[in-house]
Length: 370
Image 1 (cartoon, rainbow, N blue to C red):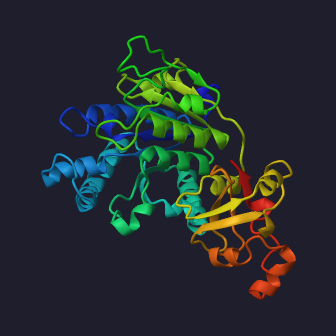
Image 2 (image 1 turned 90 degrees about the vertical axis):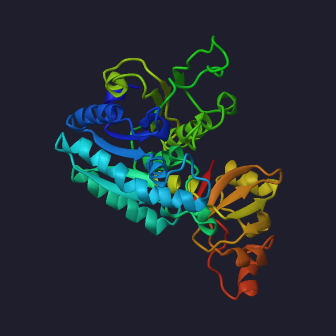
Image 3 (image 1 turned 120 degrees about the vertical axis):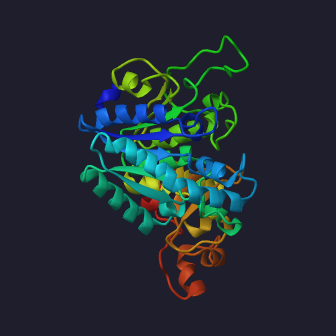
């Protein structure tokens, strides 16, 4: 892939790459990123930025080393977010570029109406020449709402890239890319330049979260998987390398590039990578074969068990009898109705429920094999 051919690009900057040794924002490094992004912008590229750092900035104002409670995180995010966006705004002002602030939770992607509204808003901003600067809304983190929060901004950046039809996701990290073994433990570790597909073998090369951030190599691989399965490319580069963004788009061989695989439609991407999926349908082997090999709809007769609570029109996970999730789809009935018609023939639905919404639990047009 020729990186410079990418038209719509999502840049993701993690906490570790934005801060200096004292825990403050490294202004020189961030302004260097902004300068290189401004250069791409003036070449006609569409840019979206996913940024971390709000909680880190706010924590210092609270006089803490790290947030110890959920309330600490909320307070720190509330203090740090305006500080963070002001820094980004000041940097882009120097180049005459306008930005906007977008704060998101997972339900903004899970609930289709909200997702479509978000997609329209972001598309309009790009059309107007605005750079959206996106972060998760860490202020919304009470325990009863924790399911609406992203586990890390790698996931957020992947959802933005995949659902906004980006050509490329650039994850700016504090490591050169993916190695064949942990470079912190093995001096002979070799950088993998290109990954054709994120397989279980590739995933085993990742270690856990990095100190100071919520993400790590495994979250970046998960992000790359989402993006490449959506028909886009992703790359991990080291933001500690001076001028890394300029080097990347000038054609230098840097980082680890993950190549796109298949191309899903916008609706298929929403189904496949819907977040906060709260419902599960366990199916028998016959139904699994029908769904995968024959591309059929999921009928009540093939369902063995319903788990969770969901409404008609929501995305549910589909598992086989061995506990493997192999598909996702939009349910035609709510969880209570699904339980009532479980294992029944379609002709029995009206007698059981008193009406027929559909002959199937999930129609084949609203189903994606993972």
